[in-house]
Image (tube, rainbow, N blue to C red; front, side, top):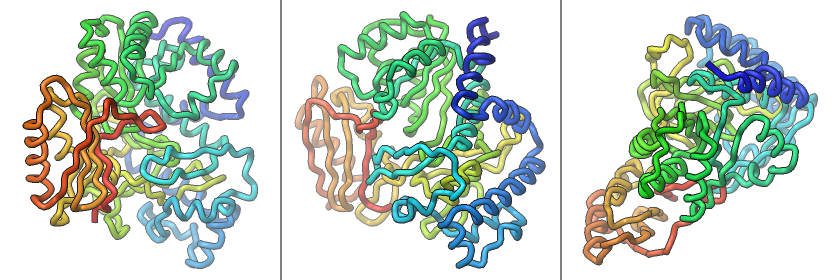
Length: 451
C-alpha cells in the first residue's frame, strides 16, 4: 500500500499540477483504468467510433489532411473497420518536414515544439498540444500503477535527453523535490559518476527506477563489480524504455537491483505506445493508439509476422500522426494476456530498422547476430559496430584485459562467417565509446536498408 506522502502527491499535488497546466490526465487515467478491462470486441467498437471522429476532425481543421482527403475522395464517415485506415498513405518524417505548418490544425490551442533525437538521421521537429500530453501522461500513469507504485513514490530517473536536462530550472527542481524524483544524467558514465550514481541510489532508496536499459544495466554491473549491494533497498520495479531491451540487460538489472523489469515502448513523436504488465504482456495503449505492422512495400501484415511498426495516435488532432512510420520493427500478437486486460499486445519489439544488418548476399539479420560475437568476450570492455555498406563493417572496440591480436582475428572470422567472406572488416580501438547526444547507447548501427 502506498504511504501517506505518496497518496498526497498522487491524489492532491500531481492533480493540481496537471490542472494548472491545462491537462486532463487525472480524469483520463481513471477512464483508462476502467476501459482496460473491457472485452476486446467492445474496446474495438469504441476505438472505431473514436477513429471516425478523429479523422472527421482533422479533415475539417488540418490543411494537409483536408487536401489529402479531397484528393483521395476519402470520407471518414465511411470507415466501417479499423482496417479501413489502410486507405490512407503511410506518413514519414520527410512528409512532416515538408508540410510542417500545414500539419497544424487551424483551431489548435497552444502548441509546444518538440524534436526527436535524430539517432537514425535528421531530427524531426513537430508540435504537441495539451490534449496529446494529457493522454500520454494518463497512459504512462496507468501503466506505472500496474506495478504497485505511483507518482510520489521515490524514483530515480536515469535519462540523457538534452531537453530534459536543460529544463532543470527552479520550478522543475521544486516539482521533482515534491514528487520525490531524482535525475541522474545517462550520458555521463565515467567511473567517478558511476560511483556517485550507486551511492545516490543507496542513499535515496527509491521504490522505482526509470531509464534506458543500457544505462541501468551499466550502473548495475558497476555496483556488482564494486561489491556494493543494491537488492536490499526495497526497489519494486525498474521501468526501461527508448532502447531495445536485451535479455542480458534484463537479467543484470533484475539480479543486481532485486526487482522485476518493466519494458516500455514509445517515442517523443509516436507517443506512449505500449507497456509491459506484471504477467509479461506488452499492452498497447489501445484507447489512443492504433498499431499496424507493414512490410517493405507498406502492406499491412497479420499478427505473428514481422514488419515496421506504424502508429496512428488518436489524441493528436492538433498536429496529427496518422499511419506514422516509426522505423521500428515488431510483431503483433492475436493472443490475450493472462492478466485479463482486453488491451491488444505487441508480441515482439525487435529494434529499429537501423539495428538490422545486411549480409553480402542480401540476407537480413538482426544486429544481435553480431552482438553475440563480441558481447561475452571478457577481453572486450565495450564495442560498437557500424555497417556503412554490404561490403564493409567498422568495429570499434574498447580493449579489456587480455585483448590480443588473436582476439581481433577471432572476431573478424566470426563476423565474416555471418556476413560473407568478402566483407572488409576494419577495427579501431578508442579509449571509450561515446553515447549518443540523447544519452542512449547503440551497439549496432547499419546504414544499409534492410530490403
